[in-house]
Image (cartoon, rainbow, N blue to C red; front, top):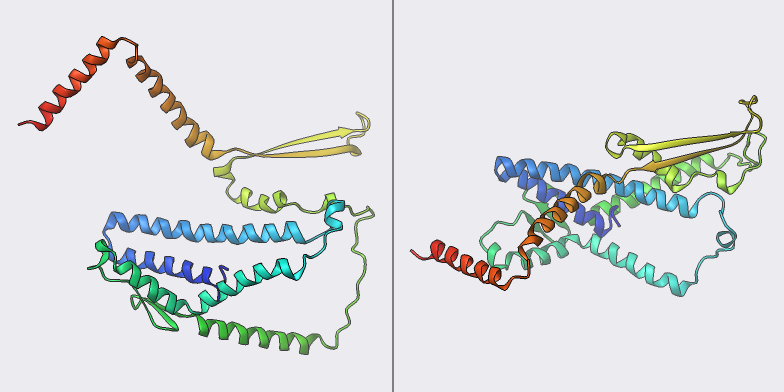
Length: 279
């Protein structure tokens, strides 16, 4: 749904345009925050693409890794009907982005704290305009994509119609190909982990078992264990947790079970409030 002409693409486009307009209108400090937010949103979009490529590849491609997967069959039309309806709604919302954006803009501008503010988004039935900075027409985008697909399909047919396609067994270096040899979701994501290795701090442990001590070129088995540190827990969550526990231990001494001390606390707070609010 994040690709044109679906609604996810429209919402992401509007989010980017709102941030771009904010950069041009707000102060210096807030402008830096919006620039960082734009970079974070773009980075998140790229990771989302990688995520869904990984999910589709690990789920539907290569050989089945278990007997249950090898015996899997497509569900019936009754179960696919619900998904088809959701896809149709996403398409309709994307193609009618102008109308939907106009309705949402009217709702937002009617709020009490936004009545006097200028909207950065204006729209007609077919076109969404972001403060004269960028415009988008989803019906035009849909028509363009449809025409491009037809042209590419015709060109591929013209080029490949006289070519012969032969199917043969993949060369496997003399070994039997097994499902466990296929790339996994973890292996697919390893390239991303390697790119951000400075931040994520991945670990790797290699264990080799030899048939005989002197035959180091003929190992019996080799295993590699990859690990990944939980950066969030180690560098943020646990320090905050330890700080809160330390504060709790210190403040716990206030509750000593002596009612006279509790009355003293109340009396001290009342005197403090009188000194602050009574002139």
